[in-house]
Image (cartoon, rainbow, N blue to C red; front, top):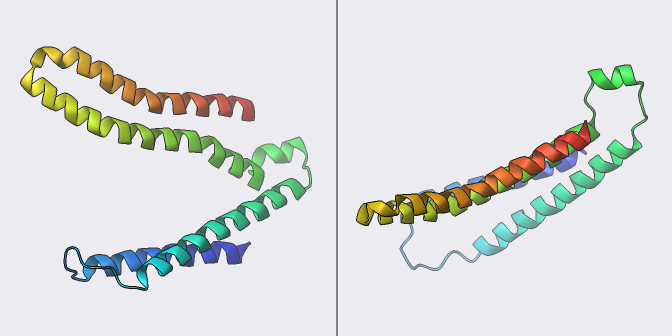
Length: 151
């Protein structure tokens, strides 16, 4: 399992180094990227996805193959299965928050532009912002419901 974590780390480090290299190098606008760029990014992406899938499969196997422990010991220690469950519970909030940020950005900019021209449209624009922000609240509700099932 440690080699999968190392492979993921190397893939991420390679992507970061490649991004820094491309950012710091001076390039002309509308210039074609180097020929090695797309295959390198594609290989990093494939290695990352395969290593993540392998890590998940190995982790799930370890979590399911773990021997049951006494209730007194189970309360004092956190196992791999519980950790994976907590990560899975946190994902809806993370995804909903990112989606809300993507939704609020253009709505907020448009609302400010409308309010600058027509101040009486403040209430209507606030409703639209609230609808866009509601996405994050839905993710939080799903996370709370999943936490209730875990305990």
